[in-house]
Length: 337
Ligand code: EPU
Image 1 (tube, helix red, strand yellow):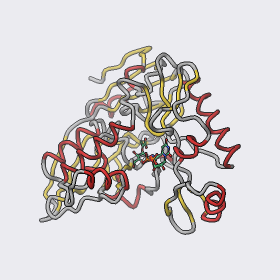
Image 2 (cartoon, protein in one colour; image 1 turned 120 degrees about the horizontal axis):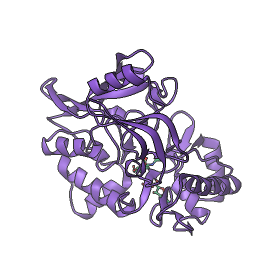
Image 3 (tube, protein in one colour; image 1 turned 45 degrees about the horizontal axis):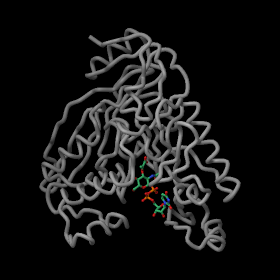
């Protein structure tokens, strides 16, 4: 039986910790629950995973589905790799810890990212030099308009920086049932190229880190910079790092020589939004119950009791000052509902 409740507070289901009500909430634990809910009530208005990349600014009408589909399967693909399938509602970090415990390499850099397995491909989660697409094999998803199960191979997903087909043409059309990743069981070379990660390991004299050591480093770095949502409501990076034309970045760097930048495809460079926001004086600034985090300017925090609308208004002010000072339009990374 699919559990359906009426007029449900979503406060426990979003990491910003804002109060907002769903007219109806269906909790799905198996793919069958989802099929039954679809047959009985039709497609949902919204789907929530871990609620860690969403800002809810108003009451949600109709059905909200909560994806809690679990289950873990391991297939031995070949000598060097295993293909692991995880339920869309599984907590992402649990999967990372499981992989690390079993000596499977490929997602250790993605430790401690909040949210669920099913949400991971939607925004192609990434951190410390690795993106989900690097290990992604395929996924199975329930097509809400038809009730069919569709399989998406990597090329079908159109992965980009914090982007996929599920944020574009296929937006709102699928419930992700299961995600399959190809992880290495032999000869894995962890990616330690990201500056903060390389520094952490070097400071401890770790030259050839194991999978577990990389996960430990990532967990330590994230914990030292990013606020724990159970203590201080937040949704990680609020904005994407802007990707600009090389010429624009060089012009900015003439004026601001310390502005960092990274190559981001043909003729383009990525600049850190956190740097821009910090230079506009927002880091650690608080206006009532909303603030900009003191150790990572890209993170907006709820100091307690903030509404979604207040957080959105604060974000708009940050966007305006970055636009005014640098002529750059910051795009939200979180989904605003
Ligand atoms: N920086 C500042 N001030 C700040 C924050 C950052 O100057 O307050 C500058 C520094 O130059 C720093 C650079 O920005 O060297 C990069 O900072 P950091 O390593 O913290 O990463 P980020 O670009 O701010 C991105 C992702 C994070 C991910 C980290 C690590 C996006 C939008 N964010 O942040 O992802 O954990 O890299 O790989 O791409 C998320 O998506 O929610 C998220 C937390």
